[in-house]
Image (cartoon, rainbow over all chains, first blue to last red):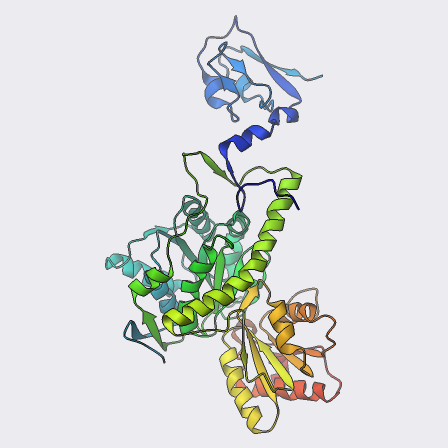
Length: 87
Length: 395
C-alpha cells in the first residue's frame, strides 16, 4: 500500500493546490482586448481562482488554472474581456 | 467513592460533571447552543466564565450547525475545543459534525442522548446519536456522572494522540444522567493538565502556508478514508492504554472498550450501553442469588466497535440478551443488536434483542429481570422472538 499524502487527515502545504490544473474544467476562456482595457484591476480582484496576474502583461490570465467561470468578463466595466468557447 | 488528597468530592448532576471536566481540561474555545437536556451544561459553563474560573473563549452560537462550525475553525487553527448538544440539535449539527469527523480534527463534544421527534417529546433514548454513528467520530457512552467527567478527560488525550486524531463524542443518556445527582470525585487541575499535555499536530498556519479540507483526487480520497479507518483500529489499543494510564493517575478505570461484570463463569450474558447498565448490575446480582448464572457486558465504546473484545468475552456463552435504546429502521431490531450480531458472526450463539427506553420509558428492574428470564430460556433451547419491545410487553 503506497501513501501519497504527507499528513494524517485532509491537510496539505499550499503547493498542493498547484497539483490540480483546474483549467481542464473550462469550456470557455476569457480573452482580454488590451486596447480596451482601462487597467482598473477588477478582474484581478474578483477572480475566484486567483488566475489573473498583474506582474506580466496587465492583465495576463493563467489558463492552467482559469476555470472559465466568466466573472472577470461580467465585472469588467469597459467590456474588455470576452468569453470565447473552447474548441 | 474513591478519592485521594488530589481530588475533591462534589455532588453533581451529569451536566455539572461535564462542566467540571470542561473547567479542568485547559480549553481554548467553546461554542455552544442550549437544548434540553443539555441546557444546564451551557449555563454551568457560562457561569464559570462569568466567575473568572474559565480561560476559554466562549462563543454563543446562533445554532448547532454554527457552534460546530466555530469549533471546527478553532480546532483547525490549533485550539483545544468543546461543544455539546442533544437530539434535534445533533441533527441540525450534522453537516459540520461529519466535516469535523472527516477532517480528523481532535474536537471533543458531549451529546445528552435524547429521543427524536415525532412523536413530540423531550425524553431519553439513544435514537439521536445512532443517526450519526458513521460520521467518522469515536463514540463513548457513559454509565454514570463520574464516568462522564473521566471520559471527557480521557477523550482529549485520545483525540489528540498523533496516532489517532479522531474527534470524540461522549454520550450520556439525557435526564437519567444529565439531571441525576451523584457524588463524584473532581480531580485537581494540575493533575489533569499533566495528563493532557499539548501535542503537536498539523494546523492552519502561514509558515509554511497550510490548507485543510483539501481537494483530493480519487486515489487520494481513497487514501484519506483508508487512513481514517486504520486510525480507528489504532484507537482501540489507545483507548485501553489511556484507560490504564488514567487508573494509574486518578485511581479509576472503566475497562477500556467494554466492561465485564460477573461474566467469567456466566452461562448467559446481558449486553447494555448507557445509564441502564447500573440497573442491569442490580438485576445480575439478584438473578445470581436465584441461581441463574448471568453476567453483563457494558459497551463503553460504540465506535470503533470493540469486536475483538466482545468475541473474546462472549465466545463460550450459551445465549445473549441485548438491550437496545434505539430502533434501526429497516432492520428488525436495534443498533446494538445489529452490530453485535455482525461482530459475533460465525459463533452461532443465539441473540435476543430487547428494545426499551424509548422516549424516556423506564428500563426498570422487573423488565431487565424479564430479559434475563427470556435469555435464560433461550439458552435452554426454548423458542424466542428475535426482537421484544419491552414497553409494549408491560401493557
